Image: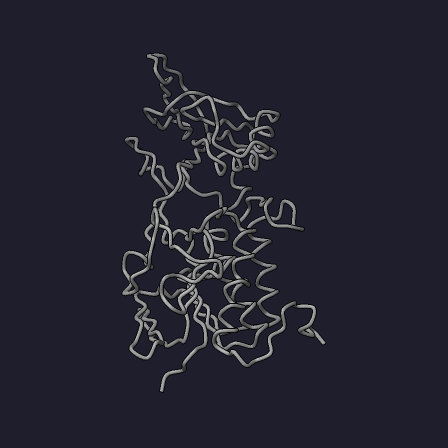
Amino acid sequence: MAKMYDITIIGGGPAGMFAAFYCGLHELNAQLIESLPQLGGQVNALYPEKQIWDVAGLPGVTGHELVSQLQKQLAVAPVDQFTNETVEDVVKEADGTFTVKSAGRVSHSRAIVIALGNGAFKPRKLALDGADEVEGNQLHYFVTHRDDFADKRVAVLGGGNSAIDIALMLEPIAKQVSLVHRRDQFRGMEHSVSLLKQSSVNLVTPFLPKELQVEDDQSVTLKLKKMRSDEMTNLNVDRIVVNYGFKSNNAALDQWSLNLAAERNLIKVDSTMQTNIENVYAIGDGITYPGKTALIATAFGEAPTAITALAKKLYPTKRLATHSSSMKIGK
């Protein structure tokens, strides 16, 4: 008979990793499933060198550093881990347990914790002729290795938090960074916007890219149109980083057999992180509840809330340690 897990955590980003760690602390029989080849989710895949400022006690930690520390933490109380495995369906059986179906494996679990963030993600592409031909060379949607942009003239397209973070991250090593946004005002957090205005980043607003042309020296000229005007200007750069956000497809809502209650494509949960389905919990950016703030720090609080609630429900007579300090870790 196939192994029956206490808890299956679907999604190996920071929230899922921390939830798996708490499963280990409570000595629950758990598995962690991640669709990417490595743990870390979007933070590790998209922003490994981006500095993160909303994790308490780790100011300016990079995505790669954060995931590395989470992996060390997870090793203290390990659970079964499966990477490069996409969950295609979750079915609730008549006895209340769940069948988890992946392409090459079927497993069973007493409870589910969904930590998928906003689901499968694809960048919103730059809709200009010729953009696809230079993607991966002069044009990028992710900054995987910051040093690839050293001594380059870089145009960052976008006006949100991530675009501002990328511009500030590249400023110390790039020859010149220009931030192109269609509005004069930026959508980023006030402190980030203040840092941006104090930096040497060239703010090109309010302009919208209209044409892209590759020059003989392999540089790229962006033809920019000023909003609500006929004014045009050119910006010649070596690299373009497009950050117009991402389109997501949340399999938990769109493809699985679970009929999860949702609001604005986010899974609705209660104060313990339980969904409308008994023993199905959800944490991270893909959920909503009154007062929810989509931060990694918030998800790190949601993980122990969900796992502790489930542990008490699955093992009501078991004495559970409330604080890690009482768990005798490393002794």
